[in-house]
Each structure stands twice: as C-alpha cells, then as structure tokens.
Length: 157
Image 1 (spheres, one colour):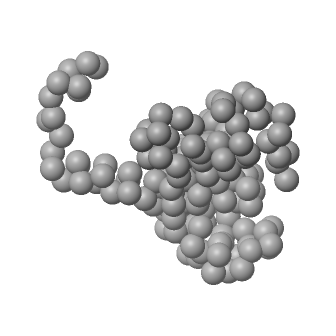
Image 2 (tube, one colour):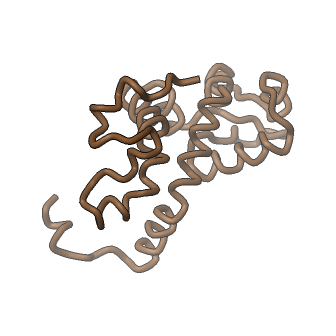
C-alpha cells in the first residue's frame, strides 16, 4: 500500500477521471443525499429485483418529474442505481453503492455527520489553514472548538 505514495503509475486518462470526480464531489454528495432524504433509494430497494419505473417512483414522492429525472440520471452515473436490462420503460433497481448508502450504519452516520456538521464549515478550510484555527465553526457560532459548541448546534429538522 505504501508503494502508492512513492510511485505515480496511474494512467493519464485514469488520473483525469479521478480529478473530475474530485471536481464534482460536492455535487455528487448533495445528489446522493437527496436520493436518501427523498426516500428514493428506499423506494427503489423495496421494488426488489423486478425494479420500478420512474412513473411509479414519482407516485411515491412529492418531486416534479424533472427533479426526479435529474436525480435518477445522476444516480445512474454514480452507480447508486441500475437499469433492469431490456426494460421498457426503464425499471430501476438499487446498485451496490446505493445499498451501502442506505443500509450500512457507518456510511449512514458518516454521510449525516458530514452533511450536518462538516459540509458548510469546510468552505472555510483555506482560511483555517492560513489562520491555524477552525474558521468553519463560525457557521455554528463563535467557538474555539467544536466541543464547546456541541450543545448549541441546532437539532436536525
């Protein structure tokens, strides 16, 4: 494993792909979080191996057709969901990555922690590094450390 720190053997095309993943990471994160929060991944999981159409997913959400189609397209690209082969109209099933997002306790805790605690404050990471102090805490209040502000962090809505 440490060899990866000493050599740079990745192909240029793969490096570019990984760089693009980093560039779009905040968007990817938010799209995945929406798939969880709007219960779409659970709806798809509950459809089983037969899958579920976009129309039937729509009946189980309060989203517009446009909003759902955007999330489904993003989720396909992220491999959160898959299309049942030869289905017409398309039927969606849960992919392995989507499965772990909603069923793995560690992943669920981490995605919620990053969303609720870290996400907004990380915008100030550059300032934190320059000033050698946790500048991102200002999203919660005027605290020297997160521990002093834990009791003041708003409850999840």
